[in-house]
Image 1: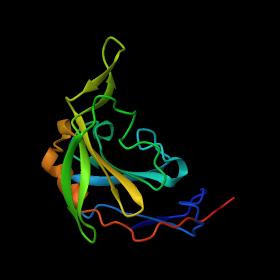
Image 2 (image 1 turned 180 degrees about the vertical axis):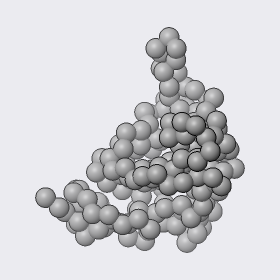
Image 3 (image 1 turned 45 degrees about the vertical axis):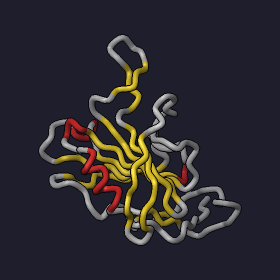
Image 4 (image 1 turned 90 degrees about the vertical axis):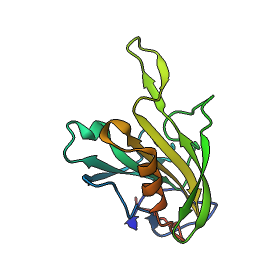
Length: 173
């Protein structure tokens, strides 16, 4: 469990002391944790209540641009990672999480990307993701096919996440 102190607004009208973020207990072989980012772009738009855990594959050149990342937001503004995905509702999949049992997730076979003609397109060639709600947070797992993160690996990472039973904040000024 990643614990951090953030400046934030109350969740569901409640004031809190600290926030606990779930972290995966499994990452694919060869991946190394790189960093945790607060208020990341490309996430759920959760602002200061959102973090992204960034992993890179050690033996893959430029793997920071093709990461395995886990986004966690206590106050998400979107249901999918990145820009809203009209006409890309996602495929419903079932996950089994420790401590939470079976939950519903949405699998997105692609992400928005800029084409060589500078047009925004739905690109299914590399990145794909899962998004789901568990307990008090929304979680997203995104991975690069180019680096070897398959659908099965996304599922394995997601199913290794243990959800917090509490979501608390500390107000720091």
